[in-house]
Image (cartoon, rainbow, N blue to C red; front, side):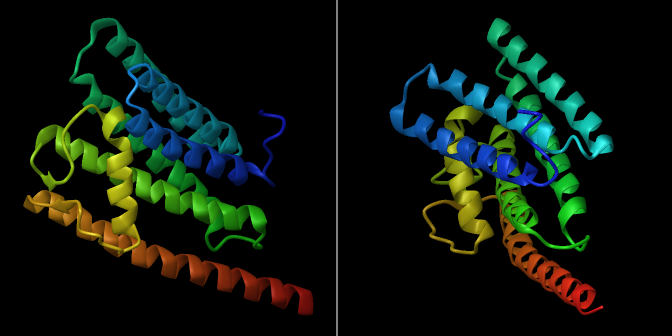
Length: 223
């Protein structure tokens, strides 16, 4: 896989991995089979690996993300061996940090930098997916500490709840606001409206970046 992933196509692989993670979490909800939990953990691990391989060109963030991945795998093993429920919180924190690091690395590579190409356009989609995933994990963390923070969103194992949290996150991020899941507590409400604001600003920033890159390309061609 490492040989196939280059700086010209790395964001294609990363985006596909994120989409597979989101789809697999919904299948876990629909099929309700116990061993699918293990499959979701394996797919999450695969997503981390693809993110690492896609971002290995950014050496600084690569080392940071690698350390997070190793720590996450250790926690998964401990949870499987000893069944500590509290480990879920640490796993979610590591996932949040990992996706945030991935987001920062991609943002440095595609926004307001160099010429625009198809790989960078796909990278902007990966950024959007990562935004939604990060907020979904934030909602899962809120549920760990305050189970009654949302109506329509029950507190349960993160693997069983990732699909619901991701659904609510992307509905909020795109400001659709269906209303089937709603924040109740002040903390949850703040996190939700911050995501809605981030969604609006993200679209504005991406459009500005693409327009700026297009103008630079045109100026270079004219020059």
